[in-house]
Length: 63
Image (cartoon, rainbow, N blue to C red; front, side):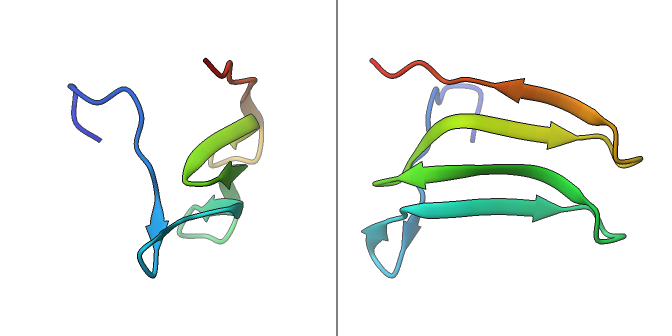
């Protein structure tokens, strides 16, 4: 995302993504985890520091 975007829709094979989404650090530990519905983030999203300690849990508000 750029500084001008407030949200970004994720597409897979031309369709908005729905399902779980997880990213990892190079060592294989979880970095961020959450889910998408029709390409938009759904609550909650959790992130961890590279040492495995929980960084945050965010509950998104839908408009």
